[in-house]
Image 1 (cartoon, rainbow, N blue to C red):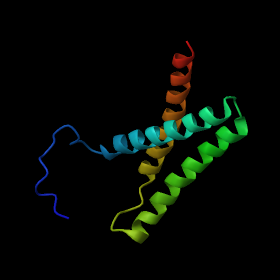
Image 2 (tube, rainbow, N blue to C red):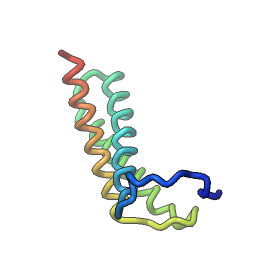
Image 3 (cartoon, rainbow, N blue to C red):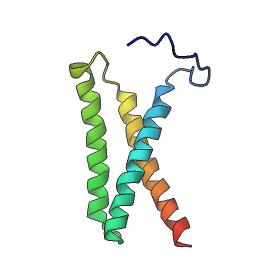
Image 4 (cartoon, rainbow, N blue to C red):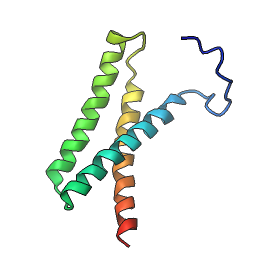
Length: 103
């Protein structure tokens, strides 16, 4: 696919700007998972929270490991770290959201 028709955007033209995209994607994904857990269970189940954390982190690791095998992309350690940061950001965003909605 040619990217010639896409206009040039100066906003994300700095080194490692893709890390912001990784963090935002995993933040959104984590908020969805933690919100679904909260909607269905309505209490703090620490084991389930850890399962969601580990599941999302393993998902991010699997995606990074499979990229060079399945596509013409490379496995990046910092992308994986950004994925983990996104999972934590999503958890804390969800917690803040629940506190605000309980008021």
